[in-house]
Length: 224
Image 1 (tube, rainbow, N blue to C red):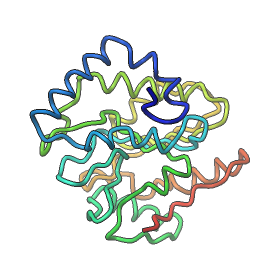
Image 2: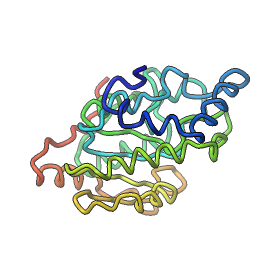
Image 3: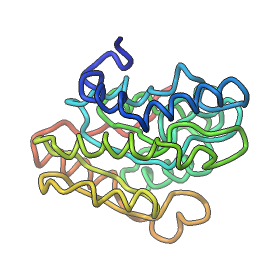
Image 4: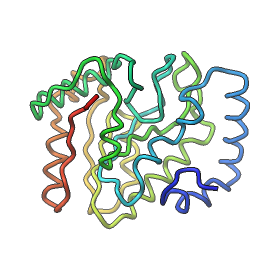
């Protein structure tokens, strides 16, 4: 049965048969049945559905989904239409403006337009309980998303990995192929953005790298 509707179905089929993933699946069935879990089940794999394997140009790695009602929809740092961009995303917009002069709307945070260009907006953990950040950590998602990163590492076409914050930075060890570019910075949250996320210029560096290798730049405008 096609889950993602693209190459990821074949690439991840074996992974999803492993005992750890089957245990994760049973855990999630119980969680969705007995608790408020985000994102909605139908949005769980939005990132993989929108960014098929061969079209990924950039990976932006988050931690786990937003844990407030109506926010998460399966793309890291993104919120569904009609929801005010959270502080981390507002800081991402500020850095884009300072880096590229692009002013994104302050009341719109749906990053689907990036995903359609080959920006894989991936969290290391894909689900969370309402109001309980990191509540689904340690149940198997980390192993699953590590496999995604490892598969992308095998790509011959270059990819830019944007790793923001210490947990994302640790994933750099999975990216061993020298054709890829790893860019690290502190997390864009209000607690750490001023310690080096602001001024990192990751967006212009990403586009320069893609352009140098003959690929289209990412249009970092967020268009309602």
